[in-house]
Image 1 (cartoon, rainbow, N blue to C red):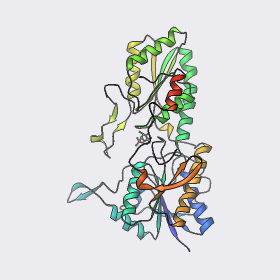
Image 2: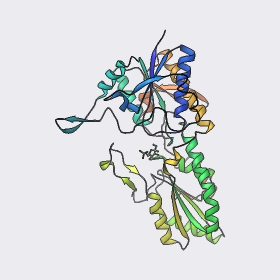
Image 3: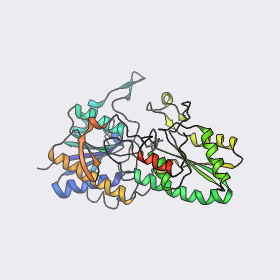
Image 4: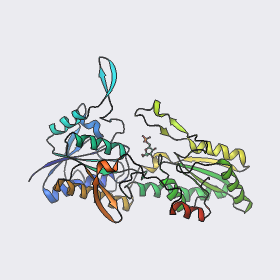
Length: 363
Ligand code: F6P
């Protein structure tokens, strides 16, 4: 039976989103003969002036290798807490029902919502209001518990690993300590895996509060043993043993009630320069980790997630999201997937392996 479905991408962008969009469009059209609508700029596209157009096979041609999202995204427009002008005063309201009504006005019957924890929570809320929604998890942070891995993460780890390879040569030439700050919010996956892959000497994770003195001592030991440089990878969410975390914008001052992390690299570099006579420099990789070409792994996972999302709509498995478990793409209820983060186990095998290799984790 002919159907119209819609897709949107919400939250921060990440490599592999276009592979999902292409997977959804091609499967919907080629397998079912359905129409697909693209909603632009996340849930913002369903509030105010509707930003919706049709996605055809032609619209998704040549996008597999592109980073970002051809639909645009937004990590501001949360319909559950949306700024509404009431008599000249901004009031924060739940406008989810308006999103549902606007969605149906497009003629679509089911929605594929691609996003991280925030977007999936909104998807859950919309499905409670009766909207047939299927979720697709994404984030470079790899912090969603429902899936073994998110697409975008592999690309971010590759970008950081390449940066570490490049920083090794310049660090060694100048006998410097290079402090490299990476993304990941409250999860240290990017720092840990790229640090191991890139041969870091020190890796600081949000899951293991660090003691600056032990890091100074480790760098000195390397020096005494004849190493002319050190590479320190710091996750943006890492914090000192006394609980001090560095933010660029506090949660209370941010647009969306979430702190903007960043700056810990500079602080760690300053502390290290106080306890060592080596030159210390900082590199903040920032959004480079999120932009650009997705790796083959992320293209394949994104494609499989897109195909599976359409399968779920075809069988009527709404309020579910796709996920990778082992080697299989499965589905799981969105409600069971949101709200609990997948963090690095401070005593897990990966952390232990790093420590057995002599990598110092700041504890
Ligand atoms: O969640 C993905 C992520 O890139 C985090 O690693 C980072 O803290 C955050 O988004 C940055 O968000 P923004 O692009 O809004 O600054």
